Each structure stands twice: as C-alpha cells, then as structure tokens.
Length: 197
Image (cartoon, rainbow, N blue to C red; front, side, top):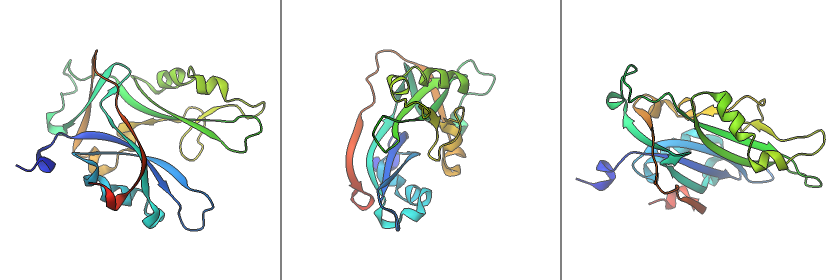
C-alpha cells in the first residue's frame, strides 16, 4: 500500500505568507489542517486563503504531537472515545496569538502559544504568564490577546473550532497525558506550495 495513503494522520500548524495584490508588505496567517503529509493539504490551504493567489507559501510548519505534557493524536471520529468514556479527556487544545508593542518600533509584535486546558479562561491566564506578554508593553498600548484580526482580550481559538469542516466532520483530536516525549520540531523557511513533496 502507498505510504501516502496509509500513513498516520497528523495535525499540522502552518505559518502561511502571501504578498497579496495591492499589499505593501507580506502578510501572514496560521492554518491548521489534518493530513498524512503536507502535500495533501495544498488544496485546503488554497481554499483557506483564496485572495492570496499564487503568492501564497509556507514560512514554517509543525506537526503537533506534544503540547504542555500532553500527546495530541488525530483519530477518525468513529474511533473517538464515547462522551461517557474515561478515555475522553476534558482537555482541549488552544491557539492564542499574543500581540504587543515595543517603544520606537512601528509594528505590532506577535507571539503564538499552543496550550492544553479544559477552559479558555485557563488558557488565557497561562498565556498572560509568558515573557512576551509581560515585556511587550508601551504605556497606553499594552500587550493583548487577539486573533488574526485583533479581537478582544478573551478571544482565543480552540483548535477544533477553527479546523475546516472537511477536518471537523471526519476527525477527533485525542489529548492524553504523556511524559518523556520529545518536543515538536519547528520547520522554518520559505516553501512554495507547488514545491511541497
């Protein structure tokens, strides 16, 4: 059987870049998708950011397998534990985009956080403990928790909520305590979609 078809399903976090028409600087956004490899995600990436056109590319990516001492595994919906099962964890995977400012720099600095918690409020409190949140403050323009469009302090994403329907309808994220697992590898660098193997 072809490895591309039979490989293990993975949750990907991808940093996308684009110099979209009529923009002066490259713009970025994060895409989360489920596939056996990056190449399978290309059509979903194009659907996610159609206005980016042919300039869309990867600036980095990560296979999410370990966050805050929890293993993150993708399973088919029909293989997910039942709601009454003790195997079903109340923990959820959250994505937070911290934004902040530094004196004399005309740019909003960003720092992204993945965290595992039961509730959004817990994830927010944990994010506020980061060095970035504490150090990126300018009087009258402190750090804030926002999404890609600058939403209020309490607005963060549960990963399952921002996955495209094509993923939500078929897959479940199984989150279980794990120790000794290595940190996820962060892959950085410019990669055009048509060059993904």
